[in-house]
Length: 111
Figure 1 (tube, rainbow, N blue to C red):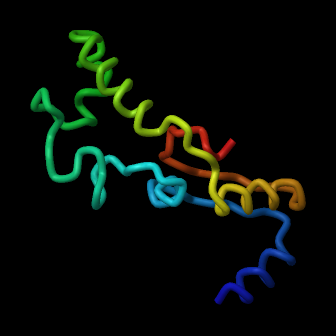
Figure 2 (cartoon, rainbow, N blue to C red):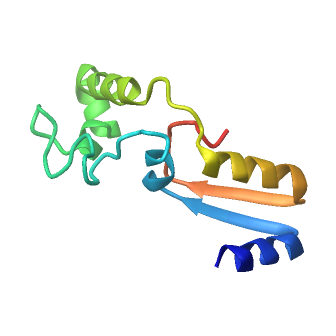
């Protein structure tokens, strides 16, 4: 399978990568809700789903709450380094005319 992918990439001038939490998990980052995630099967200690705690309405009403969870997420991600998958994408960016990354990740490791 990898040989087929490599063959297709040698012929490509455009590639789109679609990534999610699994990409960053390989850098040792916890997912939000996945197995072993920061909020696996639970709400935050304040009783809100993490998505709600980080939402605009909660930030406007209770910014200290949103900042609390942003700080938790930042601490869990501190020191993380791009993994081999990130480096392969970066390498392809230097070799192909057009490479795009579509991701939900906010950890900055795709840079």
